[in-house]
Length: 275
Ligand SMILES: *[C@@H]1O[C@H](CO)[C@@H](O)[C@H](O)[C@H]1NC(C)=O
Ligand SMILES: *[C@@H]1O[C@H](CO)[C@@H](O)[C@H](O)[C@H]1NC(C)=O
Image (cartoon, rainbow, N blue to C red; front, side, top):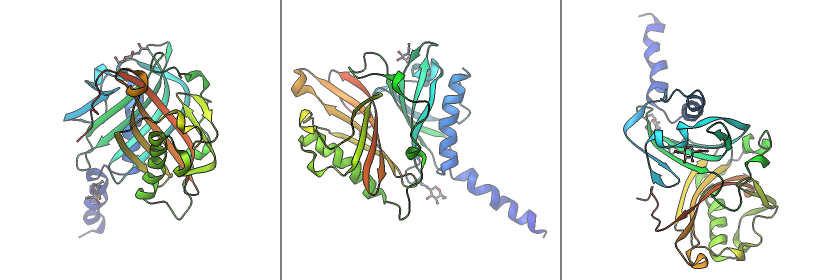
């Protein structure tokens, strides 16, 4: 048998049958944004028949998300987290919607490893009114290079990366930043507004219970996305929650940058992705 005939199926099979590679996951997100901007109204990546889609914690169809009105990017700025272990990718962008309005958008997608079809899409779509802090015009053209710089060897484990992001969530919840694994300088940007250069400081202002904590972990970059809901009800005197996609970039085992996209939810809250 000629060798190329025998080897061909094996060189084709792995990429066709395993979607949980960096390039496959990245191409799903690229397709989402490119086809939205081109107003093609359909993704090239197959959407599984049971796909679940949420925007700002509401279960919707793709046509009911900002996919339908995303017209451009205000700036090419972007950060991402690729989680090959969980077959997920998350990406934060600064798009223009309906040809005029700058938004701050974070998307998480999960693929089926066997078919490559999209099983899950979770979007935070922040617009004016999402929060007091909302400044899409403050994003620079490009994200700081640290966000796309590989984490130097030895890589942090999944558990270590989650521990960094979770230490911050614990600090917010307890109002005590002493246990936060933050670097000496740790910039925190919220909906485009730089709040501090010291992520572990000033947390006594919060003291919000954070029952929702989900993760997308990029071991190559040392980036972890925490998907959180802060219960602000006790302070607000009514049911009020802050729904966030909060990206953490680790350097030397500690959080050195935090970028959050966030949107306020009023009324009773249940995490659409719980369970
Ligand atoms: C874009 O569409 C989404 C989903 O329908 C909507 O929530 C959002 O308000 C729209 N954006 C603008 C600027 O109209
Ligand atoms: C995807 O499938 C490949 C091949 O079967 C396997 O090695 C890999 O662990 C799977 N990844 C996930 C996240 O299930």
